[in-house]
Length: 180
Image (cartoon, rainbow, N blue to C red; front, side, top):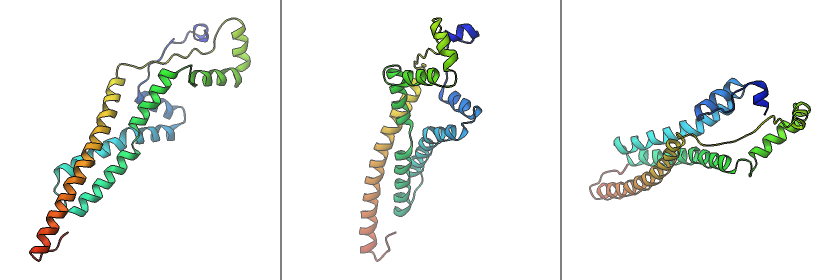
C-alpha cells in the first residue's frame, strides 16, 4: 500500500477528542466546536439542569421553565445521534459508503494520477478499515444513560410540578393566599 511506500504508520486510533483536535488543527475548528457543543456540552448542561431541578427548591413557574429548558437541551444534544452515526460508519464501512466515498475522493481527486499509476503496480493509496476502540463502551453507556435519565426525569419533574401546582392552588384559594 501507499503507507508501505511512504513508511507511515499502518493504523491510527482516534478518540472523539483526538478527532476534534485534528479538525481544529487542520482548519476545521468550527466543525470541531459544533461537534463538541452538541456531543458534550449540551448533554452536560441537561444533566446540570436536572440536578438543579432535583435539589433546589423553586416556585412552580421557575420549575416549569427549567423543565422546558432541560427538555430542549435533551432534544438538541446529539450524543445518541453521534453513537448511531459511528455505528453506521464502522459497521457499514465499505458497504454503506464511507469506504466507497474515500475511494472516489482519492481516485478522482487531485491525487488521482499518482494513485491510479500506483494502482497499476498493485499499490493502493488508501485502505480504510474502521473499528471501535474499547472506550466506545463508555460513550455508548453515557448516551443510553443520558437518554433514559432525561426521559425518566422529565416525566417525574412534570408529575411533581403538576401535583405541586394543584396543591398550591388548592391551599391558595381556600386560605385567601395567592398561588405563584
